[in-house]
Image: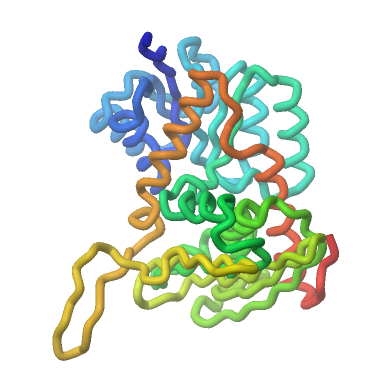
Length: 341
């Protein structure tokens, strides 16, 4: 069997998560050459050149798009930039991987879908990495095999360790709120695990437990939400930015013949500590330690979809629906009313 060709990639955005993607693309993803990096921050560009050996460093996204040997771009940029950057990438003839969420506005999601439909030869995928986590994939496969009968309820939570520096307050003007920033992962999981049902109505509420500055933006640091689907299936969500113990992602899927649980104990490793305080284990400090393997797998999946001309593992419509539900949850939180979809 002949070896696959190699994909020449440009990374756009070299912040906290962008660096992780860049390292994977440069060192861990097969059949990839990281040939360009883009950031408005000089120090980040210097890091890409020195640490990863990226040959072409750009301060402007359109310079990446003008680089003839770039076949695909990885966008790890602020959400407000995603829609136009995806569209510009497609117009430049590039395949596009973009971190979640697709957009903070439903109209922009649909603009991206329309442009992608005009470029069927190009692949576009949004980074809902939990679908690529081995444990979630195993749960999905068990559901498809009928192990728990007919699934009817997903209960999922995304809990982050408290950051006393107030990062999320500074991020609040552009984050879209806790449900679009955090719960959107759980929303996508729920749709996927329940068979992509159509949402019918949502309700959300929340509280500012620590970060008072969020009130100015109509946001909270702890929120709960429910989503009812047209076929009667349900989802319940909890998001927090104030946990003391670390990052925790827990999902339960209830079916007519059983239940699956993913992430019951958020372990950093397999070491158990027994001392005067009792028996315990250390927790994953951030989402990346929990989902490091999933990030790598989604990158590999996208590259394979381009090189082998396969459909991406999730569609732009999936990303649009996650945003649509997230926007409705934000509206419900701010109006304290049920929002019909």
